[in-house]
Image (cartoon, rainbow, N blue to C red; front, side):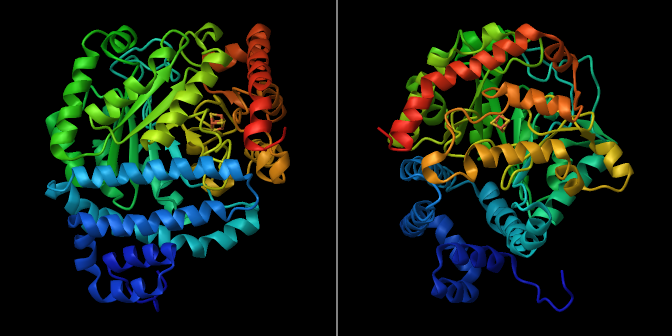
Length: 501
Ligand code: SF4
C-alpha cells in the first residue's frame, strides 16, 4: 500500500466495491457512516436482503444487456446464468442464517479481505493491458498433489496412492501471492489427485487456505477425507468450498470410485450442512451414465442434499486408460445441454457444464485469457487448461529463474490460444461469432491445438498425452468428434443465437 494511502476499514472496503458496482452514490455515504451495522443488517434481515439483491439483479441485467458486441440471445443466456448464480447465493444465505461461525467468518474476514484484493484490481489493469492487450486472468486451477486415496476408472489425472509427487508449500504459497499482486485475483481452484491428502513441510491444504483469507478456494475432492475435524476447520476458515465428485447415484458412483464411497459422500454432505460450509457437486458424464444427469439428479443434489452449485464434466479422453468410446455422443451432448439449460433458466439452479456452458463464459476460458485461467499440476507443469495435458513451462524452473506468473502467460503457446479465442468469436462482430456450443480448442477443434502443441514443442505431462501424440486414430477420432458436433450445432447456433434464418 502507498504510504500516503489511508487504511480503509474492512467493511468500508466491502461497501465501496458494492456501491461502485450498483452505482448508487448515496449508498457509499451511508456505508461509510453505518458500515458494520449495514453488513449485519443485510445478513440478518431477509427483507433488506431481498431489496439489496433486487438492486444487484437490476444492475446485473443492465451490465449484460449493455454489451452491444454480443448477440442479443447470447446476452439473454448469460443473464440467465447470472440470475441462477444470484438465486443460489440468496438460497445459501437464507440457509445459513443461524450458522454464526460461517457468518462471522464471511462478514468479518472473507468478504472484506476479498474486497480489498478486488479493489486493487483497477490499478493493475492498465499496466497489464499494455503488456498483454487483455485483462488479467481471473483465477488459477492448481493440483497441489498427484496422490489420491482412490483409483477411479478414467481419472483425467491418472492419480492413485502410488505417487507422492506434490508442489512444495513455498511454491504454492508464492503462486497464490503473485496472482493477488499481479492480477488482483481472489479465486483459486484446487484439484488433484486428492487435495485433502496434500502435505508439504508439515503443512496441509487448510494451512494454505488459512494463510490466504483474501482468496476464496473451491476444491474438487472425492469427499472421503472430509472428517468432522476437517469440516469444522473449514467452517471456521470460511473461505473454502468443496465440490464433491459423484457419477450419478450410489450404483454409478461406487462402480467407478469403489464400494462404500457414496455413503461416505452422503455423510460428508451432512457434516458440511451441520457446520454451514457451502458445497457443490461435480459429475462426470460418460456415454453410459449421461442420461441419468437430468432434472431428477439436479433436484436430488441441489434441493434435497442442499448443494450450492453443480459442475458437469463430460468425460475427456485423457488420463487413465483413455478411450474415445467413453465420450458422450454429439446427440447426447446436445440433449445434456438442453436439460441443463432448462434447470438454469426455469429452476434458477447454478449448474455449469465445462463445455456446454461456453455461451455463459464467452467461450473458452483457458490460456490466461482475461478473467479466465490456466492450470499448474503437482510437478509444476503449466498447461493452458486442465484438459490440455501439454506444457510449455514448469513453474518450479520459472521461479528459479526469477520469472513470474506474467512471464508464464506471455509464452507463444498461451498467446496463440488466446488469439484463437479472439479470432473464433470474442472479437468477431455479433453476427459473425463462432459457435460457442463448441468452444473448446481440444475437444471441439483438435486440429488447431495439435498444430500449436507441435509448433511450440509443448511436452506431454503424462503418458496418456504422449500416447495421444503417437496415435493417429485417436487424433482422427478427436477431429471427427468436433466436426460432428459442429454439423449438429452450427445450424442451431446460427438460427437461435445469431438470429439467421
Ligand atoms: S480448453 Fe476447452 S476445456 Fe479448457 S477452458 Fe477452453 S473450452 Fe474449456
